Image 1: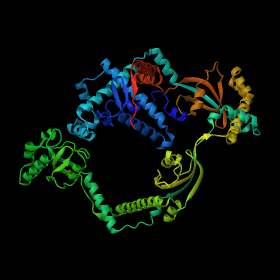
Image 2: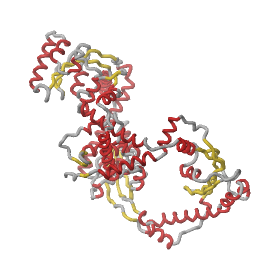
Image 3: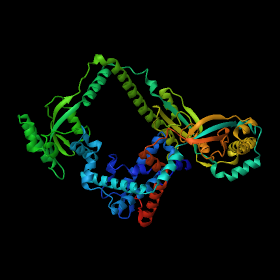
Image 4: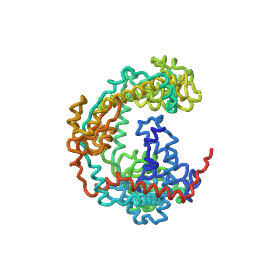
Length: 630
């Protein structure tokens, strides 16, 4: 838990990266458009935050952390994430409400200008109304809902930036901070192996017990399992797969279809609207068939657009759908477009959620399907891969059936001529190439296993591409370690402490000499050897972080030729870190704008003032967490 809290340290933390979105982010925007019947999770003054919104934010935050831990959900603490998101959702609501109260909002005209500049709505460097319409259609939102979201997000950005930027920094403050950050220290480093000390030391039983009693809270035996498992690899089917000519033809057809799908298409359509603002479905279908009949009788498409189409945007352009993209109008629409092979060809009426469409292909470009002979080798490889994949997936399906019917790993292993493997005392932090996989661990230490599920699992696909079935024979929950179990670790810790103590004693006189003598005189009577590292700038990675902190924690040398020194133990060494001179990094030459950025990054005053402001808003607010329905 503590390690995870460190990952998200800061009471606002990284969670605000999800909730304090950039004002015009066009990702996940549908979460803002919940219906009026949505279950309410939190009420902040008069504002309701729905359970759907909160769940979406929690999922987004979990997804971010999962990226940082390689998808291993066992490393996350869901309760901590939920608490952080809950807190940040309240903060977000309070700041937006305060921004509205203070009038920190953009006008409709300003929001419209901002909207039109978004890259997602640009085509050839110009705003595209069609791209905006396509986005609204795919997100099932209206322009008013989109603008409402923009208004809230810009208000949030305005109020946070206004508070952050009000902290006062004099020119002297700025220069002092820049000078401190751009510092470099001429550093010398000595390494003293701890293994040279206390080689025969063995902690007494009394010392071990005293340490155990004092630190018992940190000694827990992690949950662990005894498990048998079977692994099936795709490679086992490589030699069994034989590609036929029919297989090759199927791959070639798919290859040709993909080339056609990737082609650039310009289309026009006639739309008959349905729904609340349109015709009844039967009437719209009948009208679309009438239009189709008129087209077949020789009527011009453009004339029928003007006469019938109920899409106001495309109607002004003789039916042209500006910036058509796959997915904008749904699968049925896309299938109809892909079915048109020649310019001027029109589709039969196609039904979508918007109504009925008759589509015309105006231009098709970029299609050049090579003959099979020229791509035969490439497609043969693809066909083999497809065959292997199909055989592998069939095997997984049959293996799952065997596991369900027999509850026997041995039967499954016999079916595919693989071995049953056994592992005992497996913990979540194990390093086994199979059992350490994130998906496998999630199942091994699931609530179902903890509650007694001892059946053969269904197949679990690992990140390496293999599939695993397991059967847990024993689950042991987390519990405090006994003194006997903790003894070896405690003895090692006590021995290391003794090694550090003796190592520090061995250099005690040297450290004292550095305080009263020039460095060359102090070193003359010592056997300790230092490595000269030269100037070490801050954040340079020339030293490990913990040793760099030591180098920058010692005071400046008091006299020419003197060193400021400090010892620190890390890993298997006692280090002596010495600084002989302090200067300025010549490469750290900043513009005025960069100096402001550095001050904002390293000076906490602005963030502290924002935190204080948020606490004030909390103290004045009425916040209620609603009971969730079962």
